[in-house]
Image 1: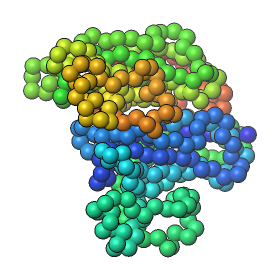
Image 2: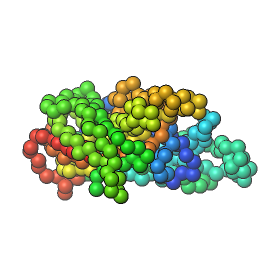
Image 3: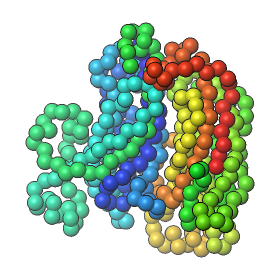
Image 4: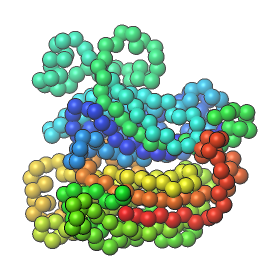
Length: 175
Length: 188
């Protein structure tokens, strides 16, 4: 079986209008993939930046997959939330990125979006907070049923991931 | 240029330690250390420099649990107590070569304003009981932090026998063979 190691960090995020951000992340794979070690999902700490506008999380990711096929290559999906001083959380963006398929160190910049809703929801979000969220978060990393959504751009999440492959050349796969 | 970057603070020292998974073991070198205390230079750039050497060798059976270096920076507050100025962690680079990494430093923050005030007076800021927690992903959901500085690391990495065991760490046109088995770095 071929093996893939994904090791790195969710470094931080820029471009969001809110401070005090945290990120919920997860990795989704197809049926041929099996997670041998590591946690498949997690949530970062809440960071309030003092210098500059980039929120830093430095959240480590260390995953070891074994696979029998190339379909369902791992996708990393993210939800960025902001937390205010009262402890209430508000969605700031959804985003996803495929884990890079070539071995080496990669800097990923994952752009995010958030659902807009009608003018009533937008007005409520500006005054009270909250705002529409996805009921089924798998829309973030699949293409089905997206045509109904009206969204606005959020900020960018920065990741540094290293991909180490094992035994791929044995199966004739060129990466 | 390479320096710790903490614009608001001075007289800093740092501790480093390595955190790694169960399949890893250090074979030589020091796993932990403490640097000297550095003050800002008098010139316009206000450099903070440690120039601290790191030299360690690991062996492993599995890339899972790849070592991370955890840096904790401390300095005096207004009353002279030693308080933590930042924690940060980064994985040791995965490919052989010379790597420069600038890592953000953050401190845990109390959620209530009253606690922030009392901890400022008493000199006892929120700290992690075990710095190795910073290298883990689990249990971070409930922590609030403030990022307030950076530390730059310069690391030279040499790997041995990765290809022999079937691991590809870089694309084909970048693969070279490297056979010295010492990794060293400078912490500035």
